Amino acid sequence: MPVSYEERLQGFDWSMAEEALGYKSGDPINIGWYCSDRICDMGLAQKPALIWENSKGAERTYTFDEIRILSDNIAAHLQSQGVQAGDRVCIFMDRHAELYISFLAVLKLGAVVQPLFSAFGEESLYTRLENAETNAVLTEMKHVRKVRRIRERLPNLKNIFVIDGAEKPLKELEQPLTMNALPAAPDFKCAETGPETPSVLHYTSGTTGQPKGAQHVHYSIVSQSITAKWVLDLQDDDVYWCNADPGWVTGTSYGIIGPWSNGITQAVLDAGFNTDNWYRFIAKHKISVWYSAPTAIRLLMRDGADLVKQHDLSCLRHLCSVGEPLNAEAVIWSEEAYGMPFHDTFWQTETGCMVVTNWPGMKVKPGSMGKPFPGITAGIIDPETGEEITEPGKVGIIALRPGWPSQIRGYRNNEAGWNKKFLNGWYLCGDQGSIDQDGYYWFSGRDDDVINTGGHLVGPFEIESALLEHEAVAESAAVATPDKVNMEVVKAFVVLKSGFEPSDDLDLAIMNFIRKKLSPLAMPQHIEFIDQLPKTRSGKIVRRILRAQEFGEDLGDVSTLMNDDD
Ligand code: PRX
Figure (cartoon, rainbow, N blue to C red):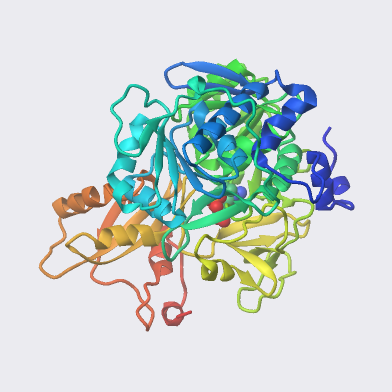
């Protein structure tokens, strides 16, 4: 049985997490080293670190010693090609072994790793590379053309490494990087980065402006490692599977750093969603701990419990979920189908690690996100006064007292945006929720206009900017509309310029126009032509009204919302 929540809570402080990691305050700390060299030093060099499979049935296992050596070789090679400590290095590829191993390599070099979801289109890619002033990109032939189309607008970009580029026609700045054929680098010295040295740069969306670069530091590993160990309940002989892509924070905090810093074997499936294939994968590799997301769970539910019985899933021991509200039905279904509940966890790109969790062994209240992790001071705040709400069940803003190890240190080149997240000494998550009489947290909804589609945050600004570039569009508003599987999808309301009339052809033309600019996730599923948008007196669009209509919610007296001009 895992140690109880109450017991862990007693006298917890983060120095215990440093100790668990083997870190002494004042020493250098490098995530790449802690995830590979240290594990080998602990006698686990021959233990599998990565069991990798793709959609074509190719399969490979890498030991901790192999990921140590290969990440050193990649780091030394990048260095020899001019990549330096502090540079931003973007990894833009599908879930190849190279993604996971070069993630460690970039960190070992002391550079900042910027993983981006490979499904991004060129404009989504451009915005993020431009903001990060990215110096190098590691990619593959399948995606290199997107980089080629924007390269000239990126003056800082000096190197494009193509993992399958050997003997392929490459262009300016490009060179092949064949991981298994790189010269050995036994003398490579891992950078002695400090706790505050920038490490991972993830991009996340807000209501206004382009996506923000959330800057993590090497010290984040302290809370990522202990939360992985305690909340995912990782044990030495576990085989762990995280469904998230490392283009998003779950895929790095708990798809690389959490498991590997604990010396845990993890499995990766580079393939799209398919229930039967997922169950086959779990049974084949004897996955025991599984970290998934509500959208995937809803798809598994759709395919029914009968399919579960066709596979031997007795290897599963502990299930967790993140990214969106995990509805009570999904928890109850998982108890019936797998014999155990999914444990919801709540956190964000900005928090770097889980902050509110269902502790293993703690009573699960289906629909609740659980309780704050030891060392995390959470509360529900009145957004007007910044005072804590103590009344059970009363909804306010979910907030955290700053200062845990993996809280980001800011948004890149956007100090004002980061400062806005704080009120009365609290960090505001941008979500609404409440606490019940037993101290369990319940999620109510976002407190801003960000759309959460299938666990991915999409900011309205990006979509509206793309729409506005179309010659027929005068104004637009992107809001969430309900969806059975993805919880929410994007809907765009469009006001046309005079001289243009709504029609199916125009709808299609606008969709095709913005498809080139947006990632598939951010694409509206519907466009509705509308005469005018709801606005405040000073002319700000009130997306909340459109959203509420989509969800059939009663807004009460709308005139007060229209006056709300903050
Ligand atoms: O709105 C909350 C939702 O996802 C947001 C964070 O998104 P992101 O930074 O992309 O990180 C996602 C993975 C950590 C939160 O502000 N969210 C995350 N987990 C939950 C959730 N909403 C409800 N329940 C959750 N468990």
